Structures are given as C-alpha cells and as structure tokens.
Image: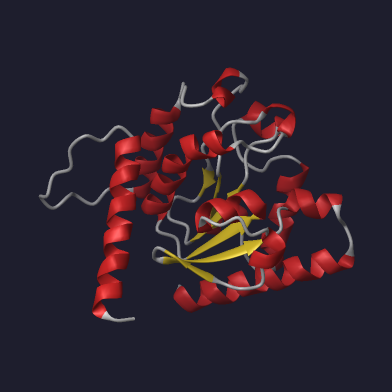
Amino acid sequence: MDEREILADVLRDLAQTLRHHQDLGVTEISLAQAPVVDPQEALRTQEAALQGCPRCKLSTSRTTVVFGSGNPRARLLVVGEGPGEEEDRQGKPFVGRAGQLLTKMLAAVGFDRERDCYIANVVKCRPERNRNPEPDEVAACTPFLMAQVDTLQPAVILALGNFAAQTLLATREGITKLRGRTYEYRSSVLVPTFHPAFLLRNPGQEFKRMAWDDLKLARREYDRFT
C-alpha cells in the first residue's frame, strides 16, 4: 500500500468517526489533547444517553434498551443482531437459549464471558416478534455500536450472524461466504461466524464444525494480539 492509499484510508476513517460523533449529538470537537477517559465511565455515559431513544420505530414496542454487558476493558467484543424477548425483559444481551449456547461456545475456546468479553448488538431494541431489523433501524443504531467499538478498542471482534457481519463489513454477502477468514476492521481483527440462534435451529454437525473452526480462529487472533 503506497502513501496515497494510506492517507485515503486515514481520511475515510476520520470522516466516518466525525459522522458518528455528529449522530451522537456532538457539535464541537476540541483540538486540545483530550483527557484519557475510563472505558467503563464512557460506556456508562453512552448507555445513559440511549435511554428513551426515539430514533426509530423499535422505540415504540421495546420494554428496555439493551445496551451491552461484560468487561469494559475486554479485548474481545462479541456483536450480535438484536435483543430477543428475554433480553428485552432483562435488559442484557444474550440471556436466552442463544445466550446460553454463546456462553458455552466462548468457554470452549477459553473465554470467560464476564471476564474476557464485552457483548453488544447491532440494534439495541427488540424488533417485534423477533423479526429481522430493517435498514433504517440498523442505520439509527449503528452510531452507538461504533461508539462502543471506539471505546473498547478490542483486539478481536466476533461478529455473530448475517446482520452483525454485514453491518460491520458494509457488505451484502451472507455469513456462509464471509465466515472462515479474518478481516481488518479499524484497529481490530474481525471474525464472522454463525449466530448461536442459527446453530440452535440447525444442529447438524457441519455447521457445528464450521462454528468451531471460527471460534478457534478468533482465539488464535486474540492470542496473537494480546
């Protein structure tokens, strides 16, 4: 990559960051050196700002905003699609059957869910009847996910399922084609794999084997950068 390509990448990242700040309501950015912000405090502030969010129609049917949970200093960020019924009730991501499977999947490659991971979703409110999030809903929530990524600065992002992988990678390719390899994402390595809910609906050995390969890949990348 030559210097012009590097500069173009930097400018694209800067433009994206400025758009995210604008979406979060920031109207002025000081050029003075900013103080170091504690990740836990930053995430708490972001979560507070989301309460009562009216940005899309999901706000009319949700019980609560499901912001995220886990270790704010974790080097592994797990990103799913959106809250389900149980998550909407409890206010935490991945607490239903899919969440129980996710906990086991992470543990199988040596990750403790509470100690080693932070878990979030593309959309923070439950779509009615667990339907797929619509494009305007994803667009409304994306700045908040980007703010979480910027705060956490994870070494590895594990993207679960189509919506997480497609949103982060800005592609329409399906998870079956995207999985099995790594992608550069800002300062992180992104590893797409199947959503645990998909694995529950499709319990065959082939999908289980592919998910296992993806988890091992995420573990190798994590160990390489931490």
